[in-house]
Image 1: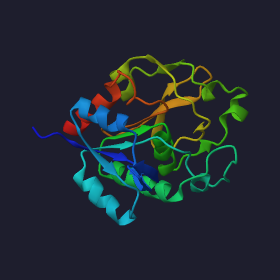
Image 2 (image 1 turned 45 degrees about the vertical axis):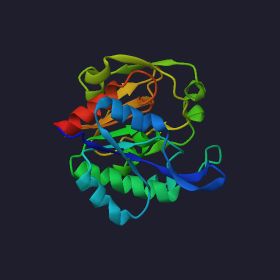
Image 3 (image 1 turned 60 degrees about the vertical axis):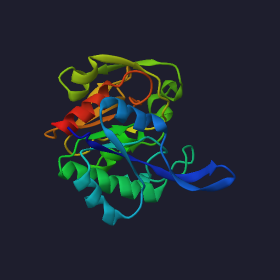
Length: 228
């Protein structure tokens, strides 16, 4: 059986090879390696023309919305907060359109960190722009591992169980859930750390990075859904 094609979103940034420094489509290799390990064929997707979105969705069997800088708050009606990195509007527009098209086509989707935020905003949700201010601590911004509780009846729970220890610093989080999304994982202060779309065969977002380390279960679940 051919390996399913799993798209991985990228971003443009300066890169060096040899004596050259040029703009390049960037993707940390952990995503492609995790997809390959799970039995999929990784396909890197640069954030170019919105006209290419439907073609990508028709050709792919699964999609990873990768991590990166925070989503432009203009997409959910708020102002940029200077405490976070400047947004990347071209990437934001492309990825929200790609997420919507994948959902409409019932293509399996895994949103990772920023990718979970893209998924939420694409469905009409909003974000907490500066999390330490909302929860009165900065534990979410630290690298120390913390426990996440997971709904065992969710697709995330079926893949990884009822809890997981993660280390994934972030300063934004889901505020209002997008249409059809439900929270399926939480930190100890009840900040949402995982979501999934009701009625979709596999549309999941998590705040942590399941492509890192040795635990590949969520990426395995995405590839399994792509094969179904």
